[in-house]
Image (cartoon, rainbow, N blue to C red; front, side):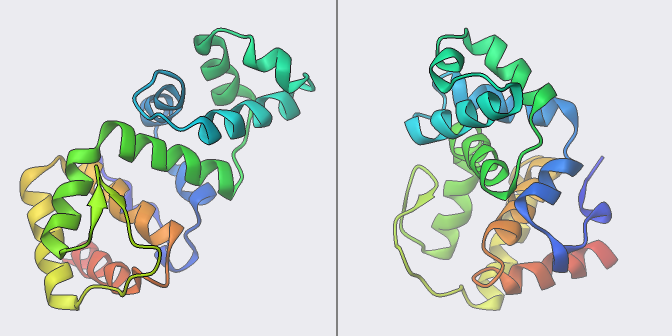
Length: 174
């Protein structure tokens, strides 16, 4: 089942997108932060800090917990704000779905490393190239994963990806 019909793309934030995800996708994203699939210490620190705040533990105590315990606590006790939700979405995509990101960015000619955009400031791709790249993603990857990736781009950077929102809206109505 796709999540796009349930989303208001004009009001989409990382936290709202996170709230719409199924339990298995949330678990995969959180596990990615802790299992080494996505090597980013800041992501783990942010997740640990959220767990510590929710449980009223010291951050040092949380860091000593086994990864599976932290995953469970993060899934059950923490309601991610936009920052943490964005971090978890990035971890999922850069850690587990990097080939899809790389494919999309390669098609658009955007410099990246393993799916992570390298340029600090880049212009939104032309609409025709963006439509072509989106069509290609749906041809090569599971539609649920593409839906989530496109929604995450829109939620995390609506200005840069404003044309993407219109493409997704048109696909939704078709």
